[in-house]
Amino acid sequence: MVTVADVRALARTLPRSSEHVIRDRVKFRVGSLVYVAFSRDESTMGFAYPKEERDSLIASEPALFFLPRPSDLRFNWVCCHLAPLDHDYLTELVTGAWRMVVPKFLARQRLGS
Image 1: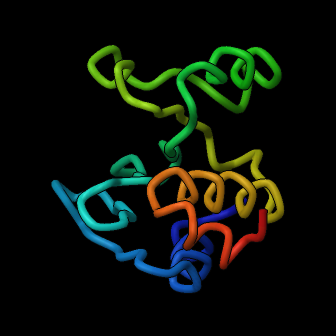
Image 2: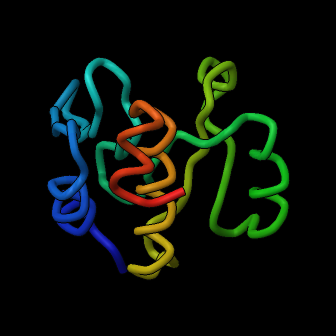
């Protein structure tokens, strides 16, 4: 199972990323844009993800992914359970979320095309 410590280690390598604790929840952001946030018990993680692709992601693995609370549906956001995630998939999700909130040139520098 992946943990907040795993995300923290990855986020430290991503330019402009910073960690914050807001209302007892760990969040990672670039500037004021949050790209990853954990539940208070750290069993679930929300992350930036394109709204138009959200339903297909959830349909592909409904035991892993789920919709955010109704008030957050307007955002580019989806949630997942941490227990079934492996480190490779976590890396893909977190770097994809980070890519959504940084300038395109910075994402290209760090991740390529």
